[in-house]
Structures are given as C-alpha cells and as structure tokens.
Length: 216
Image (cartoon, rainbow, N blue to C red):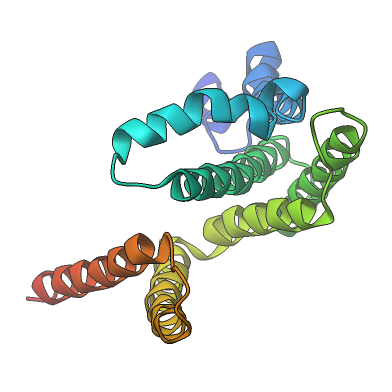
C-alpha cells in the first residue's frame, strides 16, 4: 500500500501528469505553438507583409545601410525565424512526449522530429497554394535543421551549442574575408559582408577574451 507522502513524491517526479491540469501543462504548449507556426504560413506573414514594418525598423536601427542591405537583413531575419520557430516546436513536443511517458527518450526525440517535419511540409504546401507565398523544399530543410539543433542541444547539452556557434563564427570570418578580397579584386560590391565579417571577427575575439579570463 502506498502512503500519502510517497504518492505525493511520485507525482512530483519528471514525467508525472497529475490529472487534467498535468495533461494540459504537457500537451497544450506544443499544440498551441504548432497552431502558431502554421499560422505563420498565411498571407499575413508573407515577405511583402513583414517588409512593411520590419524594413522601416531596420532602417531606423541601421541608418548607414543601403536599401539592398536592409532587404538582405530582412530576408536573413525571416530565415532565422524559420529556424527558431521549429527549434522551439521540436523542443516542446519532445518535452510533451517525455512527460507523457510516450516510450524512451529516443522515441520522444524521433516523435518530436517527425512532428516538426510533418508541420514543415504542411507549412510549405500551404504556402505553395497561397497567392503571396512560395513553398520551398529548402525551407523544409531549414526547419529540419532547427529541429535537429534543439534536440541535439537537449541530448548533448550547451557544449554542442558553443562548438557550433564557434564554427559558424569562424566560417563567417574566414569565408567573409575571402569574399571581400575576391570582390575587391573583381571590383564587385561586397554589400553586407562589410558588416557581417568584422562582426564575426569581433565575436571570435570577444569569445577568446572570455575564455582566457574564465580559465584564470
């Protein structure tokens, strides 16, 4: 026979879902976020629509930027939003599957990834039949990358995030510098590379500075 105290302790364990409140706390967040993600595929969130308020904001934040550079950062922000929203989506579904005791953690990972991919495909198919949107298989790949990044972070911890971030900074710094040189020789305008390359180098220097001081 289980005592009242032991029963309370069991209900506090990760994965416990006491009653209706527990089920709502487990399944409502991923369901709501899935609806939000699918809502983003409507005409309201087309590139033309978001440009109406994002590009003036970018112009205010970056008065030095040309219209082409502002358009570039607008597009980059939209891709970053794709990545982020599917990272959150997969993390929420993983949490729900784990708390709902739907098999092992590996099963929860596969389930969360499957939901994210299914949602991405539905999203792009919907965009392909929407007048002001264009469905793209590359966006499905980007969404999958966001989902994998979130699940890998959960599985392997923030060291993985640190390693990936450092790799991206090195890629942006070295690749950007190479393109600046090539573009200068060819007499081609490098556009936003004049901003992103020094920013990546500054981030690497700052990261090195923090690493040296944290090791003391």
